[in-house]
Image (cartoon, rainbow over all chains, first blue to last red; front, side, top):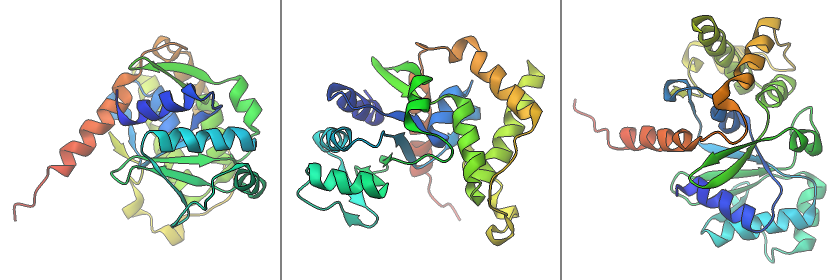
Length: 169
Length: 67
């Protein structure tokens, strides 16, 4: 089992609700390796639920990932009180193995509530693990709503790739 | 495998606008088609996605400068 699938299995084992979003989510809809986008991190969208957030932290730590808030290690103790504060602030926590696997636990997705994404998620399989991935439409619409320079660059490249692929088919 | 930053060198960051973007009808149609493909239905095996990305990174991690 690959490192990311290992993380997903740990999250699943603790009943964590999450959906893969962002470029890493869009990659699951690619039809070949040549259509994949290289991205350094995996973006997981979590509901604004402190207990779920705490369970996600525990799952990540159980597979050896370190938790970060910005450039600092996430505060301790990592309890419900801290999870409450993180959820209230919509703060991003990164779980990293320090060797290239960076998993961003995000509570905010431009233009969408978690439950909307969750209801329409697709479950793909990888090495015996079920991976919940946001709909491609939701991923793209969220990037369009955010409209940061990096989102615009992704959208331009992705649109061209998809339209070329569809013309070929 | 494309880099997420592909194309960035030709577009200076300060010249790239920010703010919500409208999606073209053709793009939205292409997304719907992509979602409807047999290989993108729930339960599809996607193990190749992560393994391809790992191979890509390993390939470039092994690269050495020759001149």
